[in-house]
Amino acid sequence: MNRASRMKQARIYIGKCFRVFFHEHGWKIFISAAIITLIICSVTSSDMFLEYRATRNGAFALVCACIWIGIFNSIQSVCKERDIIKREHRSGLHISSYITAHMVFEMALCAVESVIVTAIISVANFDRLPESGVLMPVYLELLLTFFIVIYSSDALGLMVSSIVKTPNTAMTVMPFVLILQLVMSGMIFELSGFTEQVAKLTIAKWSMNAICITANVNSLPDSLSILGQEVLSDYEYTVGNIAQMWLILVGFTAVYAVISIISLEFIDKDKR
Image: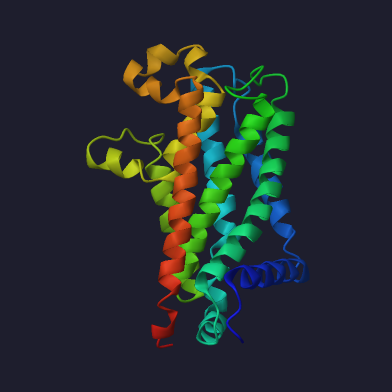
């Protein structure tokens, strides 16, 4: 293959990703996203968006669902093509173009999945949702949050898939990645010291904060009686706070993409 421009290579691989998606009936992942969200809705309290504890529990369940959906999108997408990538890299493939193509393709998948999640959550809680979000109508704000959470989780899965060498290894690593995210969310266990610092490196923590900010949990009954004011400041209902959560998650996405590129740059040293 002649060394084409990075942009041209990216376009070629974007097309390839979509062709493989349709050929392999990849639309089934949308059904999975819907089923997972329906299960979450079936177990969340009827006080979701009305009472502090129920809303925070529901936010945690939604974060779990979005992280699962995102990681599952991409956890095997790169490692299963490792031999092809190595061969084409030696023929002139730019790894940055390859990862860019996957990021664009995965963005489209995550957009559809976030619409599905938001639609189901909105219908299930249509009479309990806040009148508005911090920046925009609550439906749009939740949609944007779900998209960023799913997409950052997708990028995390892509990073893992770029580092490991086989699909089996990727699926072995996946539960540990999920457990780390969920345990360090701060919802299951009270974190302090080192674990509190580790939590800041997880998608789950900032995703929880974003959903709770949009839900304005600080204004819901029992908030001050459950947690101290210092913790509640994470959920402060301000434009700056919600924007910070989104920017942190976008930052994670960019870092994961860069690590994916760097790890694949060494694919020629793969001795398999």
